[in-house]
Length: 117
Image (tube, rainbow, N blue to C red; front, top):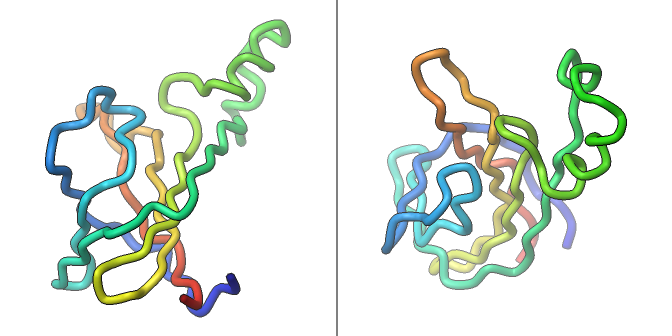
């Protein structure tokens, strides 16, 4: 599949049942974007990027770095989900695990791009 459009815009994800882990919430059942709700009918692919970037790349002992790269560590990385929606559109979404505020420990969902169906 080839990318059609890049967005990198925040979305609101919804689940039929609350996720067991807040930092690994899994594929949402639907999401809101630009005042429209998209229902996910199929998860096509899932992958993870737990690479530490910027100052976070240098704040861990080398002995623990490989494990963190595989499994992730608190507040670092992204969980990607390629989904097909009820209207037939295919999107790559990701959950950015980094907290965006000192008082909020949650990450946020981003609609990364749309792909050709």
